[in-house]
Length: 467
Image (cartoon, rainbow, N blue to C red; front, side, top):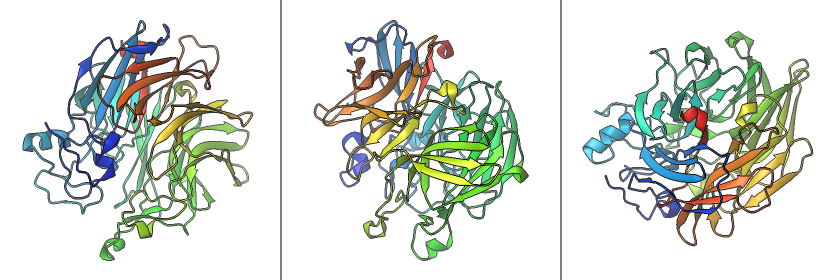
């Protein structure tokens, strides 16, 4: 199994480049001290192409690879494994890439079929199962064995899953339910919404009508509602005839937010309109009086699929934390910017997802055109203040997950955990930050014996869940 790094594509070079080996390493070097009551496993997903791509490579294209650090009794071990998707196995057998990526024309008549699910985007733990998830259309979750990170196979919920499945399902820690959606850009229904019970049974999937196919990466839940984003990243096939990419951001088209009762049907969606924007990721949502309140990282526009520099929108891809208030009684919408510092990958204490939280966490974007993150931000959503934990010069991290202390008495009693790459030494480490002392020293740094490329989303799996 080999992977090479052509110099032309920035997402195949430096620490975006794939690693070629799957390894297991015990008793890792720790600088500082791992808290004795921090016990579980941090796993992060991301793109790691096993072969040279066909044509243009987009960062979203790479095969899914999981990087995991198990922490127990003050010690740490590491392993990394590819997700053995159908795509991975076919290409591994062929010894080369057989499907092109997002930026190339699709191949509906490819002799190997059309299943290009890479399971490279995100992760979720639900009903004693751990899943690797994909952004793309039609991708079922892949069931992963912990702590080995071995692929068990696709999860179709006893063949009930007939729709696409989002990379960002939401698990309600109180009820145990998992809400998800699936979108199709090319054919109706453009949006479908599903609920999985606390025991892992797919209860319902309902179609929700949209005027046109859109890219919908994330959504949000509250105690009683789910919130969908009909944002103007639209798919119009007629663009192909003009030699344009069919998915483009339309700055003149308003954004719409749809709110549906958790167990409601398509006729109960309430739509709220705002100026054009794009949202990759939500922090949280909750109910307050007559209002549904949403917190997410909002950008004015996105250039995610723009390959020609002259077509780029100047204010694209700069996300800031925002708050929306949707009044279910009056239909009014209030949109409010909460910070002037660009950040992404927002997370909360997952035990409180869908309920009002005082704190939220995100990764601060470094200046420049690349998705690099040089610090973590903790927001106090009650006071409007924030604190920052800097990684250090030439050091870049990614999404940080909140790992609660066992029997914690406060919402922020726990740690933020993430991978950091040091460009000075070209080494990777897992960092543990005290969420109640953001400006203080890093609690522990676990030295990883090989480079961990920049990736996407992560999860913290507790010791109880592992066992």
